[in-house]
Amino acid sequence: MKKQLSLNRLLGSNRFLVVLALLIAVVGWMIVAMSEDQMTERVISGVKVDLDRHIGTFSAMGLSLIGTQEHTVDVVVFGARSVVGSLEAEDFVISVNTAQVTVPNDYQLAVEAIGRTPGNDLMTRTYPEVVEVRLDHINSQMFEVNWEIAGLASAPGFMADLPRLSPSSNVWITGPQAELDRVDRVVVAVELEEALNSPWAQEVPIILRDVAGNEIAPQETQLALEHENLTMQIPVLRVRTLPLVLDFQNLPGGLSELLLRSFMQKSAETVTIAGPISTMASHHDWWLGTINLRSLTPENNIFFFDIDMPSEQFINVDNLQAVIVEFDTENWDSVSFDIPAEDFIITGDPGGNEITVQTVALNGVTFVGDAEEIAELTLSDIVVEINLSDRELIIGPQPHPVRINIPGSELVWPVEQAGNLIVHIMVTPREE
Image (cartoon, rainbow, N blue to C red):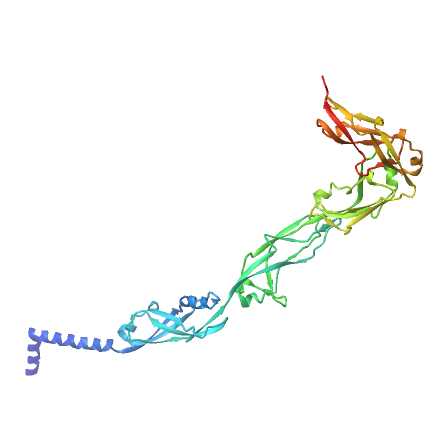
């Protein structure tokens, strides 16, 4: 009973209660302090490896990081519980050791965790202890784009021309040199189901192939293409076989062009041409050129004409490069005359001017043609005309061409030699 009374008396004492409260507080503080100073270990997961801080080092060696994968590690940290317990992933910088990096290669770089706050006595290690990175030279290379066309055929009367690619038939590819070296060919591929009778166009994807012909998917590599797609155009041309024709210049009046052509032989009579559909619809023949009859003689009776395409839109299907035109002159002959000025006639309006012929005669004018007609040709059969409408007149002396006709003759014409078919005239204003 005495002990119980003593305990009750103590509990009822204010002084005792104050002392007891202080004692409890001190003991609690000591327990907490001892707990905070206790060392502990903790794992902080998903801490990002900071490879960006090494970009300058890699660039100095001409290398670039390949791939965009983000590397993370788990940081195992050991230290005072009071410090370790408040740490987060942002409190660490995860660096790598780049000492072994020298050339393009795949590397396993050792990882180091560095605390951002100095003075914390912490021990760290990472898991994994290394990260795998790929370093290579980043280059750009231009490749010619080829085409692979299955089922290409043309409808009758048409021809498919070479395909064209736009905006370019070349493409720049940028990426690691090791992956660029894998690219052997760059192509666009299409499959046609019907024969073409009109131009065809479609946007098609660019395909990369290795040396074995296998497709390289750019999305599975670090290669970047200048264009992912190109527009392929297949021009379609109309094909026509056309007769070869030519014209004559300086045909005298009365000469039979039909008879003249009967003496003419061409090395080819037709040519097969492919061209734009709308243009070829209006082509009924293919013009070779012109023969100046004044240069045609028994000795100069062969003429050459090139087959030239008017533009790159046309194709010479026959690959006929030139045509030879030859005249059969076995029954031809020639004769020369001096034609006096009094036999000249002036035609055309002189425009209020006086015209005086200063040339005394056309000397040594040679005429060629059918031998029988040449034998019967006389000076009186020849008409020399000075047509004033052939060119613009000026005041004063000037040369002027003449026209020579042989009325009644079907196959005789004059030959021009050293300007002998030119006369000189004087033009003076007519006095009122």
